[in-house]
Amino acid sequence: IDPKKIEFTPYDGLPHLMINEIITDTQKAIMSLNWAIKEMERRYELFEQKTRSGTAVRNINEYNANLSEDEEKLPKIVIVVDELADLMSVAKKDIEERIQRLTQKARAAGIHLVIATQRPSVDVITGVIKGNLPTRMAFRVIQEVDSRTILDESGAEKLLGNGDMLYKTGGMFNCLRVQGAFLSSAEVAAVVANIKENNEAYFDPEVSDYINRTAPEEGGDDDDADGDGGTVGPEYIKALAIVVKLGSASISLIQRKCAVGYNHAGKIIEWMELMGYISPFDGKAKARTVLLTKEEFESKYGDLG
Image 1: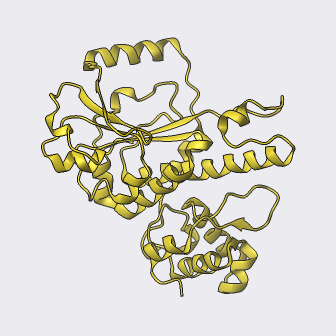
Image 2: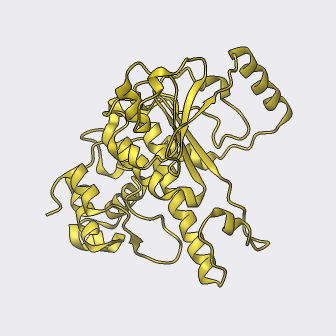
Image 3: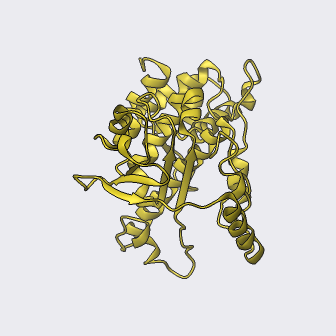
């Protein structure tokens, strides 16, 4: 994810990427984080099914070590974001909520986040984000307060630059000073070209289609409301409040509680899933698990009532 549109462009098309596209649009960035949340929940459901079958698994490594012949190995996924400040300036609440959910739960599912910013201020690295990112690195910063924002201690303002940095994980009392490697643009281009020439790429069109789904236009037909958090009708928020209270969601429930037709209720369920508010359909249970908490609802939409 590269809202500046220049940092990650040289890596476009690398065969280990999930999609043949560098995400530069804020709404697509939100959708990519939505997809990651959906994939995280899907993986936890697989872990649960494996455990119920008699093989206890708590993380991706244990799951992959106990696969049957017809089960597919789960790859580890890394989402790299640069520059976070640009995303936060446009859609702070949406980005912050999704980063929080992923950093709280996704590690055991094999999904990881690497987030970078050149503006380490408290309105970019908020308490919510900072509290869920235990591993941190700081290059040279201008002010001591910036160092404290990143590392909870001073020191980064005294670094020499040129890759000189401080590294800290959740289990460390003091920072470790290390030297980052430098790669020129020409070296990056040469390595990327070599990898692309000698390896075949298999991108995932389903992930790409999901990320490129668009939000409904303001005042548009509600039947087109399948988006990424754009304007939706009041019945969407009413339905969401109902399922948050009840703890489960289904088309029939929304039909009854909101007095809407089957197709409209189906669109509302699709929107909830797309936003990461409810679990994906698993082919078995009719009711979906509600993933959005009361506090998260009220933070985004107001009083639950």
